[in-house]
Length: 264
Image (cartoon, rainbow, N blue to C red):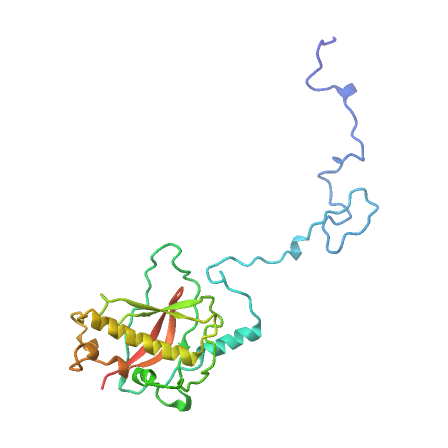
């Protein structure tokens, strides 16, 4: 019986045999004898279809995860890394028994989503006076005509920091209503340890002058931390008798001096 239109499926007489040279032949068969990946420069081949110019998966370079700890950080050699570690840490100076560390909050409340990167953390910078002597007082630093004599005085302590400037934050207990931050330029990473210590002493001096100008009063419960400079020396502690032991990184460009106060 003849149909006026072609059948939806051809019968045996209408089927076209598939050539053994067709690209579909053995498509799902065993793996070919040649490699489809290149582990060397492409070379001429007698095969009609050359191997694909694809790196073998076993040779893939492992990806480094993008985390906040490695954002904006430049790769450095082992030698430079060791130099930076040595530059930063040095040693914590010896503190007399009649001095007490000033308690300051270290938590930073971000002002916005992009206010700082939490994962980037720099080591603290310490100020060790040469000869194992006790640290310089702020009064001594403010009255100096020459730079202080420190271990690693000429170390460029911000050589590994990408910030052109830092913000020095002081949070003296009992004066939380008078937040204080002062910008210090890093001189493109060339700021030395000795100059940084002198600048920090001036920052502390400006902090006291600001509280005086605002007639600041210590908060209840923190009377032990009253500044003598605000009470004409009648009670409390004096900023000029303090030691600046180090400078600690809090977050982003915000740093905080580590202070020890004289307790008699």
